[in-house]
Length: 504
Image (cartoon, rainbow, N blue to C red; front, side, top):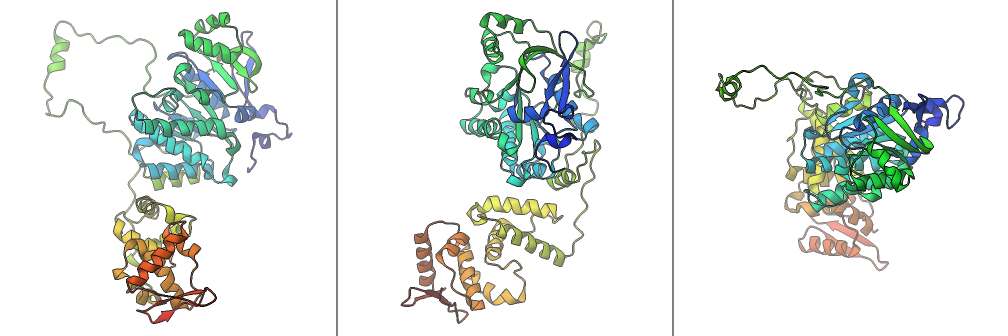
Protein backbone atom coordinates (compact mmCIF):
# COMPACT_ATOMS: atom_id res chain seq x y z
CA UNK A 1 0.00 0.00 0.00
CA UNK A 2 1.60 3.25 -1.12
CA UNK A 3 -0.94 5.80 0.17
CA UNK A 4 0.43 8.84 1.95
CA UNK A 5 -2.30 9.06 4.57
CA UNK A 6 -4.45 6.69 6.56
CA UNK A 7 -7.50 7.42 4.47
CA UNK A 8 -6.14 4.82 2.05
CA UNK A 9 -6.94 2.24 4.71
CA UNK A 10 -10.62 3.11 4.63
CA UNK A 11 -12.69 1.29 1.96
CA UNK A 12 -15.11 4.23 1.86
CA UNK A 13 -12.39 6.84 1.33
CA UNK A 14 -13.54 8.92 4.33
CA UNK A 15 -10.99 10.79 6.36
CA UNK A 16 -12.70 9.97 9.67
CA UNK A 17 -13.55 6.37 8.99
CA UNK A 18 -13.63 4.17 12.11
CA UNK A 19 -10.67 2.16 10.76
CA UNK A 20 -8.45 5.22 11.33
CA UNK A 21 -9.46 5.72 14.98
CA UNK A 22 -8.63 3.75 18.11
CA UNK A 23 -10.17 3.48 21.56
CA UNK A 24 -7.72 4.89 24.08
CA UNK A 25 -9.98 4.41 27.11
CA UNK A 26 -13.36 5.21 28.62
CA UNK A 27 -15.02 8.42 29.79
CA UNK A 28 -16.79 9.11 33.10
CA UNK A 29 -20.00 7.46 31.81
CA UNK A 30 -18.22 4.40 30.48
CA UNK A 31 -18.44 5.51 26.84
CA UNK A 32 -15.32 4.90 24.71
CA UNK A 33 -12.91 7.77 24.14
CA UNK A 34 -11.28 7.59 20.74
CA UNK A 35 -8.20 9.07 19.11
CA UNK A 36 -8.37 9.75 15.38
CA UNK A 37 -4.98 8.54 14.16
CA UNK A 38 -5.18 10.37 10.84
CA UNK A 39 -5.95 13.64 12.62
CA UNK A 40 -3.18 12.88 15.12
CA UNK A 41 -0.65 12.60 12.29
CA UNK A 42 -1.42 16.18 11.32
CA UNK A 43 -1.71 17.71 14.79
CA UNK A 44 0.71 15.80 17.10
CA UNK A 45 0.25 14.91 20.79
CA UNK A 46 1.73 15.98 24.14
CA UNK A 47 1.39 13.69 27.19
CA UNK A 48 2.26 15.02 30.64
CA UNK A 49 2.19 13.45 34.10
CA UNK A 50 4.37 12.91 37.12
CA UNK A 51 6.20 9.62 37.62
CA UNK A 52 3.62 6.94 38.41
CA UNK A 53 0.73 8.76 36.71
CA UNK A 54 0.47 6.14 33.93
CA UNK A 55 2.21 7.86 31.00
CA UNK A 56 3.99 4.71 29.84
CA UNK A 57 0.73 2.76 30.11
CA UNK A 58 -0.99 5.39 27.95
CA UNK A 59 1.76 5.32 25.32
CA UNK A 60 1.69 1.52 25.26
CA UNK A 61 -2.08 1.54 24.70
CA UNK A 62 -1.70 4.07 21.90
CA UNK A 63 1.06 2.04 20.23
CA UNK A 64 -0.69 -1.30 20.56
CA UNK A 65 -4.01 -0.08 19.18
CA UNK A 66 -2.47 1.78 16.22
CA UNK A 67 0.20 -0.82 15.36
CA UNK A 68 -1.79 -2.11 12.39
CA UNK A 69 -2.71 1.37 11.15
CA UNK A 70 0.55 3.29 10.91
CA UNK A 71 4.31 2.84 11.01
CA UNK A 72 5.73 3.51 14.48
CA UNK A 73 9.10 4.68 15.77
CA UNK A 74 9.68 4.73 19.54
CA UNK A 75 12.55 6.60 21.21
CA UNK A 76 12.80 4.58 24.43
CA UNK A 77 15.34 5.86 27.01
CA UNK A 78 14.46 3.22 29.62
CA UNK A 79 13.91 0.14 27.44
CA UNK A 80 10.25 -0.07 28.50
CA UNK A 81 8.79 -0.67 25.03
CA UNK A 82 11.04 -3.41 23.65
CA UNK A 83 8.35 -5.99 24.46
CA UNK A 84 6.31 -4.63 21.56
CA UNK A 85 8.52 -6.81 19.37
CA UNK A 86 7.06 -9.97 20.94
CA UNK A 87 3.46 -9.20 20.06
CA UNK A 88 3.54 -6.66 17.24
CA UNK A 89 6.84 -7.34 15.45
CA UNK A 90 8.66 -4.08 16.17
CA UNK A 91 12.37 -4.22 15.39
CA UNK A 92 14.43 -3.45 18.50
CA UNK A 93 17.54 -1.34 17.91
CA UNK A 94 20.05 -1.31 20.76
CA UNK A 95 21.48 2.21 20.56
CA UNK A 96 24.57 1.20 22.53
CA UNK A 97 25.59 -1.41 19.94
CA UNK A 98 26.13 0.89 16.93
CA UNK A 99 28.21 3.92 16.01
CA UNK A 100 26.64 7.18 14.73
CA UNK A 101 27.12 6.30 11.04
CA UNK A 102 25.37 2.95 11.53
CA UNK A 103 22.52 4.59 13.47
CA UNK A 104 22.04 7.10 10.64
CA UNK A 105 22.07 4.35 8.02
CA UNK A 106 19.56 2.27 9.99
CA UNK A 107 17.31 5.33 10.40
CA UNK A 108 17.35 5.92 6.66
CA UNK A 109 16.45 2.29 5.93
CA UNK A 110 13.56 2.45 8.39
CA UNK A 111 11.82 5.12 6.33
CA UNK A 112 12.61 3.33 3.10
CA UNK A 113 11.15 0.00 4.25
CA UNK A 114 8.42 1.44 6.54
CA UNK A 115 9.49 -0.69 9.49
CA UNK A 116 8.15 -0.11 13.01
CA UNK A 117 11.06 0.05 15.45
CA UNK A 118 12.00 0.72 19.06
CA UNK A 119 15.29 2.57 19.63
CA UNK A 120 16.34 1.31 23.08
CA UNK A 121 18.76 3.74 24.76
CA UNK A 122 18.88 2.26 28.26
CA UNK A 123 22.47 1.08 27.75
CA UNK A 124 23.78 4.66 27.31
CA UNK A 125 24.40 7.58 29.63
CA UNK A 126 22.34 10.75 29.23
CA UNK A 127 24.68 12.58 26.87
CA UNK A 128 25.10 9.54 24.64
CA UNK A 129 21.32 9.02 24.62
CA UNK A 130 20.82 12.59 23.39
CA UNK A 131 23.44 12.21 20.66
CA UNK A 132 22.08 8.87 19.48
CA UNK A 133 18.46 10.09 19.41
CA UNK A 134 19.48 13.25 17.54
CA UNK A 135 21.33 11.29 14.83
CA UNK A 136 18.45 8.83 14.52
CA UNK A 137 15.75 11.53 14.29
CA UNK A 138 17.91 13.45 11.84
CA UNK A 139 18.06 10.42 9.54
CA UNK A 140 14.25 10.10 9.66
CA UNK A 141 13.87 13.81 8.95
CA UNK A 142 16.32 13.83 6.02
CA UNK A 143 14.63 10.99 4.12
CA UNK A 144 14.05 11.58 0.37
CA UNK A 145 10.71 13.10 -0.58
CA UNK A 146 9.36 9.89 -2.11
CA UNK A 147 9.77 8.17 1.30
CA UNK A 148 7.69 10.65 3.31
CA UNK A 149 5.16 8.05 4.45
CA UNK A 150 3.21 8.67 7.70
CA UNK A 151 5.13 7.69 10.84
CA UNK A 152 4.10 7.98 14.47
CA UNK A 153 7.26 9.03 16.34
CA UNK A 154 6.85 8.47 20.10
CA UNK A 155 9.45 10.04 22.38
CA UNK A 156 9.25 9.04 26.04
CA UNK A 157 10.83 11.29 28.68
CA UNK A 158 10.95 14.08 26.11
CA UNK A 159 12.31 16.58 28.67
CA UNK A 160 15.63 14.70 28.42
CA UNK A 161 15.91 15.31 24.66
CA UNK A 162 14.40 18.82 24.56
CA UNK A 163 15.40 20.43 27.87
CA UNK A 164 14.13 23.93 28.60
CA UNK A 165 17.44 24.95 30.19
CA UNK A 166 21.06 23.85 30.19
CA UNK A 167 21.80 20.99 32.56
CA UNK A 168 24.55 18.48 33.09
CA UNK A 169 25.27 17.94 29.39
CA UNK A 170 27.42 20.09 27.13
CA UNK A 171 25.91 22.93 25.11
CA UNK A 172 26.80 21.20 21.83
CA UNK A 173 24.89 18.04 22.76
CA UNK A 174 21.92 20.04 24.03
CA UNK A 175 21.73 22.08 20.83
CA UNK A 176 22.03 18.93 18.69
CA UNK A 177 19.26 17.09 20.53
CA UNK A 178 17.00 20.12 20.83
CA UNK A 179 17.40 20.84 17.12
CA UNK A 180 16.34 17.29 16.22
CA UNK A 181 13.28 17.49 18.50
CA UNK A 182 12.35 20.91 17.11
CA UNK A 183 12.55 19.57 13.56
CA UNK A 184 10.33 16.64 14.56
CA UNK A 185 7.62 18.78 16.13
CA UNK A 186 7.84 21.94 13.99
CA UNK A 187 8.76 20.72 10.52
CA UNK A 188 8.11 16.99 10.65
CA UNK A 189 4.45 17.10 9.58
CA UNK A 190 5.20 17.78 5.91
CA UNK A 191 7.64 14.87 5.96
CA UNK A 192 5.05 12.49 7.42
CA UNK A 193 6.55 12.55 10.94
CA UNK A 194 3.95 12.91 13.70
CA UNK A 195 5.51 13.57 17.10
CA UNK A 196 4.01 12.08 20.27
CA UNK A 197 6.05 13.36 23.20
CA UNK A 198 5.64 12.42 26.85
CA UNK A 199 7.17 14.31 29.77
CA UNK A 200 7.11 14.28 33.56
CA UNK A 201 7.49 18.05 33.85
CA UNK A 202 6.12 20.62 31.42
CA UNK A 203 8.38 23.23 33.01
CA UNK A 204 11.45 21.18 32.00
CA UNK A 205 10.34 20.76 28.37
CA UNK A 206 11.41 23.37 25.81
CA UNK A 207 8.41 25.59 25.04
CA UNK A 208 8.96 25.70 21.27
CA UNK A 209 8.74 21.88 21.21
CA UNK A 210 5.66 21.61 23.45
CA UNK A 211 3.85 24.46 21.68
CA UNK A 212 3.63 22.57 18.37
CA UNK A 213 1.30 19.91 19.78
CA UNK A 214 -2.43 20.47 19.27
CA UNK A 215 -3.60 17.42 21.25
CA UNK A 216 -3.03 16.97 24.98
CA UNK A 217 -3.44 14.21 27.54
CA UNK A 218 -2.67 15.60 31.00
CA UNK A 219 -2.15 13.25 33.93
CA UNK A 220 -1.59 13.77 37.62
CA UNK A 221 0.89 16.48 38.58
CA UNK A 222 1.52 18.27 41.87
CA UNK A 223 3.76 21.29 41.24
CA UNK A 224 1.90 24.57 40.81
CA UNK A 225 3.93 25.67 37.77
CA UNK A 226 3.15 22.42 35.92
CA UNK A 227 -0.52 22.52 36.89
CA UNK A 228 -0.79 26.11 35.64
CA UNK A 229 0.79 25.25 32.28
CA UNK A 230 -1.39 22.16 31.92
CA UNK A 231 -4.51 24.18 32.69
CA UNK A 232 -3.51 26.80 30.10
CA UNK A 233 -3.03 24.13 27.44
CA UNK A 234 -6.41 22.59 28.25
CA UNK A 235 -8.16 25.96 28.22
CA UNK A 236 -9.11 25.69 31.90
CA UNK A 237 -9.21 28.49 34.41
CA UNK A 238 -6.44 28.64 36.95
CA UNK A 239 -8.79 27.77 39.82
CA UNK A 240 -9.75 24.60 37.95
CA UNK A 241 -6.14 23.44 37.83
CA UNK A 242 -6.54 21.71 41.20
CA UNK A 243 -8.46 18.96 39.37
CA UNK A 244 -5.19 17.89 37.73
CA UNK A 245 -3.67 17.22 41.16
CA UNK A 246 -6.57 14.93 42.09
CA UNK A 247 -6.37 12.66 39.03
CA UNK A 248 -5.89 8.96 39.80
CA UNK A 249 -3.21 6.78 38.28
CA UNK A 250 -4.11 5.98 34.67
CA UNK A 251 -6.62 8.87 34.44
CA UNK A 252 -5.99 11.78 32.07
CA UNK A 253 -7.70 14.92 30.79
CA UNK A 254 -7.76 14.96 26.98
CA UNK A 255 -8.25 17.78 24.50
CA UNK A 256 -7.52 18.36 20.82
CA UNK A 257 -8.86 17.83 17.32
CA UNK A 258 -7.87 14.15 17.39
CA UNK A 259 -9.52 13.55 20.81
CA UNK A 260 -12.30 16.00 21.71
CA UNK A 261 -13.15 19.66 21.18
CA UNK A 262 -13.73 20.15 24.92
CA UNK A 263 -11.66 18.70 27.80
CA UNK A 264 -12.72 15.12 28.47
CA UNK A 265 -11.74 12.83 31.34
CA UNK A 266 -10.47 9.43 30.20
CA UNK A 267 -9.42 6.29 32.02
CA UNK A 268 -6.82 4.51 29.90
CA UNK A 269 -7.87 0.97 28.95
CA UNK A 270 -5.86 -2.23 29.44
CA UNK A 271 -2.82 -3.20 27.38
CA UNK A 272 -1.63 -6.52 25.95
CA UNK A 273 2.11 -6.22 26.70
CA UNK A 274 4.13 -5.28 29.74
CA UNK A 275 7.51 -3.74 30.36
CA UNK A 276 10.22 -6.23 31.28
CA UNK A 277 11.58 -6.58 34.80
CA UNK A 278 8.77 -4.55 36.36
CA UNK A 279 7.64 -5.88 39.75
CA UNK A 280 4.08 -4.90 40.59
CA UNK A 281 3.04 -4.71 44.25
CA UNK A 282 4.88 -5.66 47.41
CA UNK A 283 7.04 -8.71 47.94
CA UNK A 284 7.90 -10.33 51.31
CA UNK A 285 11.40 -9.67 52.57
CA UNK A 286 13.79 -12.60 53.01
CA UNK A 287 13.67 -14.21 56.43
CA UNK A 288 17.17 -13.55 57.76
CA UNK A 289 17.30 -13.62 61.53
CA UNK A 290 20.10 -12.24 63.66
CA UNK A 291 23.36 -11.62 61.80
CA UNK A 292 22.60 -14.00 58.94
CA UNK A 293 22.16 -11.17 56.43
CA UNK A 294 25.41 -9.49 57.49
CA UNK A 295 27.24 -12.79 57.15
CA UNK A 296 25.77 -13.34 53.70
CA UNK A 297 26.76 -9.87 52.49
CA UNK A 298 30.35 -10.18 53.69
CA UNK A 299 30.89 -13.80 52.67
CA UNK A 300 33.77 -14.27 50.17
CA UNK A 301 32.98 -15.38 46.67
CA UNK A 302 33.76 -19.11 46.51
CA UNK A 303 35.05 -18.81 42.97
CA UNK A 304 37.01 -15.59 43.62
CA UNK A 305 34.93 -13.84 40.99
CA UNK A 306 34.26 -10.10 41.01
CA UNK A 307 31.29 -9.14 43.17
CA UNK A 308 29.50 -7.76 40.14
CA UNK A 309 29.14 -10.71 37.77
CA UNK A 310 28.62 -10.08 34.11
CA UNK A 311 25.27 -11.20 32.70
CA UNK A 312 25.77 -14.37 30.72
CA UNK A 313 22.35 -14.67 29.13
CA UNK A 314 22.17 -11.26 27.49
CA UNK A 315 21.82 -11.68 23.71
CA UNK A 316 24.35 -9.93 21.53
CA UNK A 317 23.07 -7.13 19.34
CA UNK A 318 23.23 -7.98 15.64
CA UNK A 319 25.61 -5.96 13.52
CA UNK A 320 24.22 -3.08 11.49
CA UNK A 321 24.15 -5.06 8.24
CA UNK A 322 22.07 -7.85 9.79
CA UNK A 323 19.72 -5.35 11.40
CA UNK A 324 19.20 -3.48 8.14
CA UNK A 325 18.53 -6.79 6.39
CA UNK A 326 15.85 -7.61 8.97
CA UNK A 327 14.30 -4.17 8.53
CA UNK A 328 14.17 -4.73 4.78
CA UNK A 329 12.53 -8.12 5.30
CA UNK A 330 10.00 -6.66 7.74
CA UNK A 331 10.68 -9.37 10.35
CA UNK A 332 11.12 -8.81 14.13
CA UNK A 333 14.41 -9.54 15.83
CA UNK A 334 14.62 -12.94 17.51
CA UNK A 335 14.93 -12.98 21.28
CA UNK A 336 17.71 -15.53 21.19
CA UNK A 337 21.37 -14.94 20.54
CA UNK A 338 21.98 -14.31 16.88
CA UNK A 339 24.70 -16.51 15.35
CA UNK A 340 27.77 -14.61 14.34
CA UNK A 341 28.08 -14.09 10.61
CA UNK A 342 30.13 -16.64 8.79
CA UNK A 343 33.51 -15.54 7.46
CA UNK A 344 33.45 -14.17 3.95
CA UNK A 345 33.37 -16.90 1.32
CA UNK A 346 34.26 -14.54 -1.50
CA UNK A 347 37.44 -15.27 -3.35
CA UNK A 348 40.04 -12.52 -3.41
CA UNK A 349 39.02 -11.58 -6.94
CA UNK A 350 35.37 -11.33 -5.96
CA UNK A 351 36.24 -9.20 -2.93
CA UNK A 352 38.23 -6.85 -5.17
CA UNK A 353 35.32 -6.60 -7.61
CA UNK A 354 32.89 -5.87 -4.78
CA UNK A 355 35.17 -3.19 -3.34
CA UNK A 356 35.47 -1.61 -6.78
CA UNK A 357 31.67 -1.58 -7.07
CA UNK A 358 31.31 0.01 -3.62
CA UNK A 359 33.83 2.72 -4.50
CA UNK A 360 32.00 3.38 -7.76
CA UNK A 361 28.68 3.76 -5.94
CA UNK A 362 30.15 6.17 -3.41
CA UNK A 363 31.92 8.23 -6.11
CA UNK A 364 28.63 8.57 -8.01
CA UNK A 365 26.78 10.11 -5.05
CA UNK A 366 26.22 13.90 -5.26
CA UNK A 367 28.66 16.09 -3.31
CA UNK A 368 30.61 13.05 -2.09
CA UNK A 369 33.91 14.86 -2.51
CA UNK A 370 32.79 17.60 -0.09
CA UNK A 371 32.69 15.14 2.82
CA UNK A 372 35.60 14.59 5.20
CA UNK A 373 37.82 11.57 4.34
CA UNK A 374 37.21 10.02 7.77
CA UNK A 375 33.45 10.21 7.28
CA UNK A 376 33.72 8.68 3.82
CA UNK A 377 35.95 5.90 5.14
CA UNK A 378 33.46 5.08 7.88
CA UNK A 379 30.71 4.84 5.28
CA UNK A 380 32.97 2.60 3.18
CA UNK A 381 33.65 0.20 6.07
CA UNK A 382 29.93 -0.09 6.81
CA UNK A 383 29.21 -0.96 3.18
CA UNK A 384 32.00 -3.55 3.22
CA UNK A 385 30.50 -5.16 6.31
CA UNK A 386 27.12 -5.26 4.60
CA UNK A 387 28.79 -7.03 1.67
CA UNK A 388 30.40 -9.52 4.11
CA UNK A 389 33.90 -8.22 3.44
CA UNK A 390 36.16 -8.24 6.48
CA UNK A 391 36.82 -4.73 7.88
CA UNK A 392 40.37 -3.45 7.57
CA UNK A 393 40.83 -4.78 4.05
CA UNK A 394 41.77 -1.23 3.04
CA UNK A 395 43.11 1.28 5.58
CA UNK A 396 42.31 5.01 5.57
CA UNK A 397 45.39 6.03 3.58
CA UNK A 398 44.75 3.44 0.87
CA UNK A 399 41.06 4.33 0.84
CA UNK A 400 41.79 8.01 0.15
CA UNK A 401 43.77 7.10 -2.96
CA UNK A 402 41.29 4.47 -4.15
CA UNK A 403 38.40 6.88 -3.67
CA UNK A 404 40.23 9.61 -5.62
CA UNK A 405 40.70 7.10 -8.46
CA UNK A 406 37.02 6.17 -8.33
CA UNK A 407 36.02 9.83 -8.59
CA UNK A 408 38.14 10.03 -11.75
CA UNK A 409 36.42 6.93 -13.14
CA UNK A 410 39.07 4.37 -12.14
CA UNK A 411 37.19 2.05 -9.79
CA UNK A 412 39.35 -1.04 -10.38
CA UNK A 413 42.99 -0.11 -9.88
CA UNK A 414 44.09 -3.55 -11.14
CA UNK A 415 42.48 -3.16 -14.57
CA UNK A 416 45.14 -3.28 -17.33
CA UNK A 417 43.88 -0.18 -19.15
CA UNK A 418 44.67 2.04 -16.15
CA UNK A 419 48.11 0.74 -15.18
CA UNK A 420 50.08 3.32 -17.17
CA UNK A 421 48.09 6.17 -15.55
CA UNK A 422 48.24 4.79 -12.01
CA UNK A 423 52.01 4.42 -12.38
CA UNK A 424 52.23 8.23 -12.53
CA UNK A 425 50.51 8.83 -9.19
CA UNK A 426 53.35 7.89 -6.86
CA UNK A 427 54.52 11.51 -6.52
CA UNK A 428 51.06 13.10 -6.49
CA UNK A 429 49.78 14.14 -3.02
CA UNK A 430 46.55 12.50 -1.90
CA UNK A 431 44.55 15.75 -1.91
CA UNK A 432 45.59 16.52 -5.51
CA UNK A 433 45.18 13.01 -6.86
CA UNK A 434 41.55 13.22 -8.00
CA UNK A 435 41.89 16.33 -10.21
CA UNK A 436 45.19 15.08 -11.66
CA UNK A 437 43.64 11.73 -12.57
CA UNK A 438 40.63 13.43 -14.15
CA UNK A 439 43.02 15.36 -16.41
CA UNK A 440 45.11 12.23 -17.16
CA UNK A 441 42.04 10.14 -18.02
CA UNK A 442 40.80 12.89 -20.36
CA UNK A 443 44.19 13.10 -22.07
CA UNK A 444 44.39 9.31 -22.42
CA UNK A 445 40.94 9.23 -24.02
CA UNK A 446 41.64 12.25 -26.26
CA UNK A 447 38.65 13.99 -24.70
CA UNK A 448 38.07 17.70 -24.10
CA UNK A 449 39.82 19.27 -21.13
CA UNK A 450 37.58 19.24 -18.01
CA UNK A 451 36.30 22.70 -17.13
CA UNK A 452 36.74 24.49 -13.81
CA UNK A 453 33.39 23.28 -12.46
CA UNK A 454 34.29 19.65 -13.04
CA UNK A 455 37.72 20.05 -11.45
CA UNK A 456 36.23 21.97 -8.53
CA UNK A 457 33.72 19.18 -7.88
CA UNK A 458 36.31 16.40 -7.80
CA UNK A 459 38.60 18.55 -5.66
CA UNK A 460 35.81 19.33 -3.18
CA UNK A 461 35.71 23.11 -3.54
CA UNK A 462 33.40 25.75 -4.98
CA UNK A 463 36.12 28.31 -5.63
CA UNK A 464 37.26 28.75 -9.28
CA UNK A 465 40.32 30.66 -8.05
CA UNK A 466 41.43 27.68 -6.06
CA UNK A 467 41.29 25.52 -9.19
CA UNK A 468 43.50 27.95 -11.06
CA UNK A 469 46.03 27.84 -8.23
CA UNK A 470 45.78 24.04 -8.27
CA UNK A 471 46.63 23.90 -11.99
CA UNK A 472 49.55 26.28 -11.45
CA UNK A 473 50.88 24.05 -8.66
CA UNK A 474 50.61 20.88 -10.77
CA UNK A 475 52.38 22.62 -13.62
CA UNK A 476 55.22 23.80 -11.37
CA UNK A 477 55.62 20.21 -10.20
CA UNK A 478 56.06 19.11 -13.82
CA UNK A 479 52.99 16.88 -13.71
CA UNK A 480 50.99 18.78 -16.34
CA UNK A 481 51.44 21.43 -19.04
CA UNK A 482 48.63 23.95 -19.52
CA UNK A 483 48.00 25.60 -22.89
CA UNK A 484 45.41 28.23 -23.74
CA UNK A 485 44.59 29.13 -27.35
CA UNK A 486 43.51 32.54 -28.64
CA UNK A 487 39.88 31.58 -28.19
CA UNK A 488 40.44 31.06 -24.46
CA UNK A 489 40.07 27.30 -24.71
CA UNK A 490 42.31 25.31 -22.38
CA UNK A 491 44.10 22.05 -23.11
CA UNK A 492 46.27 20.12 -20.64
CA UNK A 493 49.17 17.85 -21.51
CA UNK A 494 50.54 15.01 -19.39
CA UNK A 495 54.31 14.94 -20.14
CA UNK A 496 54.84 11.45 -18.68
CA UNK A 497 52.23 10.08 -21.09
CA UNK A 498 53.09 12.26 -24.04
CA UNK A 499 49.37 13.00 -24.45
CA UNK A 500 47.26 16.16 -24.64
CA UNK A 501 43.59 16.78 -24.00
CA UNK A 502 41.41 18.38 -26.64
CA UNK A 503 40.76 22.12 -26.11
CA UNK A 504 37.84 22.68 -23.78
